[in-house]
Image 1 (tube, rainbow, N blue to C red):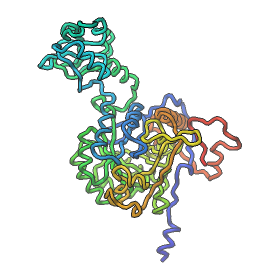
Image 2: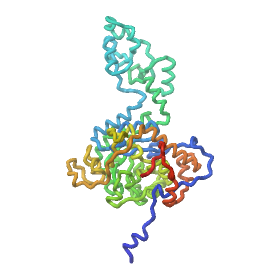
Image 3: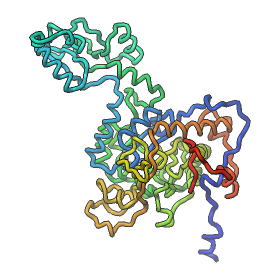
Image 4: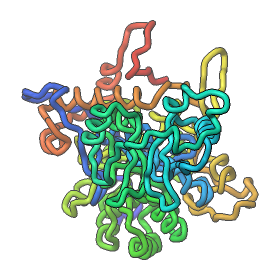
Length: 498
């Protein structure tokens, strides 16, 4: 009996992105015909299959807002206090809320001068005028104030305001609000109840902003979708970010195939309304055990494929990402649970391959790091701009912020733990500044649409069914990259490997 030799000779072959190419097939699909909407969890779908990683150098509110506008999803990292994470969630939720609920108003008995002062301080151009019962009795704008000088600024607001106020109800749609604003040539529309009580305000700027992003990922109230990370045993944080408005909670763990995590997540699920994504895992058995033991809404796949992760070297553990995604997807699809391929993606072609083997969406870290929206300071080296990028298993992430990296890698949660007693599974560095995230996503999705056009797949579901892959040699991959040339003008969607 060759107990140990069998571990080598019977080990399965596993593969990653560079081991395969997608075969072109018969097609009548042009890239512009492709639809990229996808299910990211049980109750939420995206119009773009991109999710940003819950890393402290990738996703805070600015990144989440940018992705939501493009139809994707940002996952706010958890290397923050609970209060700080809540603040980031609320920034996203309030970023494009059509009706502003916290309205600055003024009494008709105040002076015009006071109205002008409020507008200057708050940098707004108008104020609803309400009586003591919060009933709208008028509106005063800079246009009303502009002709007034000197002593006339001491007149009451009631003498200068516009009394015939154009209002809308809470049920007014974006299109209806725009029509009302245009027809009446007004810049702001108070939202009122049946008895004319002020409930909020909509401005022309808000309306046009909403129309600017027709494919944005929104909740049932029209606000941007946002996810937030949480430790597997931090039920207090889970409940707090759920109350703050997080639509999805991403359980942030380096190894999600653990019975104590299953138990904790089940308890968490009882206490929150948000959908729950659980991970990370890399095998079919992990997916089966997870889905048998829990009622989660999505699975994150990837153990060690990230560019700043050293788990596979430090611990010797992992599964090449394409095999990991496909094996988990085979199990998850039977349960109707979406799969998110997390890590190892360098080019738009890798995204296409991940979807071809069953992923519903991809989670991006390094591809979004270094953008305008990613957290961190800009530095300049040799005349070129850079931004910090680090793994959540790096010493910096384990000891900085609230030390979320420590419990992610099961190394305790004490904030004063000596760094020499930590065993990092990630590195820290810098990446070149890339500009706005929207341009990165545009190029990535353009490449994905091109791939789907070659396959003849009009949707991600069709990509799952129609895509066929060919196994290639290292020479085949060398042939695939540009060769025998010195690149003089860099392409926005291709950077050589070094």
